[in-house]
Length: 504
Image (cartoon, rainbow, N blue to C red; front, side):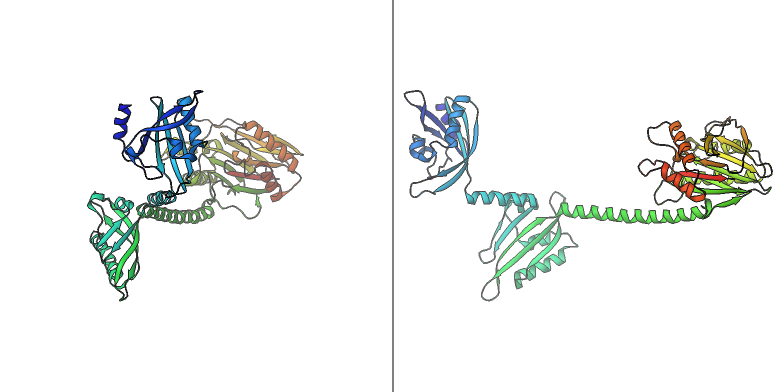
């Protein structure tokens, strides 16, 4: 027991040792204070040694049968600590009738070590106020100009990084330490507060001794005497550094967003010009060398009216028709640039009557000598229609085969040999021919029309054949619009779409 008393003598706060008193049947009938810390104080104001030798139930009869009493008994039997809040009602005069405590009890030497903190209304409000000040980074200040006294709450010392032992400083002193840009306005506002009693509400930057700069808001109001002289000042300081940093980041994000919007607007404008210059989409069905040609073009990238997919449908100087559909790997302006290069080069060579396999070979070489050939490949279908012979001759470079609709049935054309452009330095391309008959329909398309995530390409091609055969009764633009709408949904779409519908 002597050891317990020595330990408690050196502890702060309210700490006591309770020794249980047992009845004839071995049950606990009371507890006795046998040691107490010097700062221990109970509801009656008894301190330290005054508590020693007292009975718990005789001193605090209202404790009997409470959760606290049951908790004490459980600690003795289980050996586990108890924590709880006691709402104690006192009947004796001279003592507050209602009190609340936070109590903790732990087993020790056959008895209990008990600590408690009073949670009366005033203390709770003080704790709540302190918590609010910490969370809000805000502290209060009172100044009595008559007595020359200044009081700061603890949080103000934290805001200004000032040691409490140095005490508070006046607003005039703080103004002198403000950032040079903020100092004149703050000093003027402080003078008006102290001389004329004008309220003060300003935010200023102050340099702490550690070199940190903080944004501090000061709000103060003055109390004046009968002559209108300021005698007291009350207010608060609030650290707005984090808020100012967040505002600066938000401003930077807004500026970046505006810049991005301007960039997107410029890109859309450029896309519109590129659309008209590089790949004009006809507003009506084309008539070429006795063929009727309709176009469906749907770039994937929103706001950019061009993609890696492209087409050509022109009449050549000899009266034949050139029909081309191509697909460059990737999206965006890089793919558009490669698309334009291939499109115009292919048209130029076709006009010079270069054989179709030779055109593909030269386009392959062109891609291999691009600035960055590692990620530039393309697929392509190129066909020439000779109206005098009703013959279509075509070549392919790794592209899905054309689909022929004849007498209500859909058939994919045999695929001549031909690897995609940009894949090898030694490609080999072959051509194939067929006779087009009156009433035939031919579809040249890119894989965006038939691909779905996780599905084999063969299934997409079979779906295209079924859908085209079922839609064959429709003519012209309605046929192509119905076909694309049926095959491609917004949820399944992953690529650009380009389709040529050729009918005899």
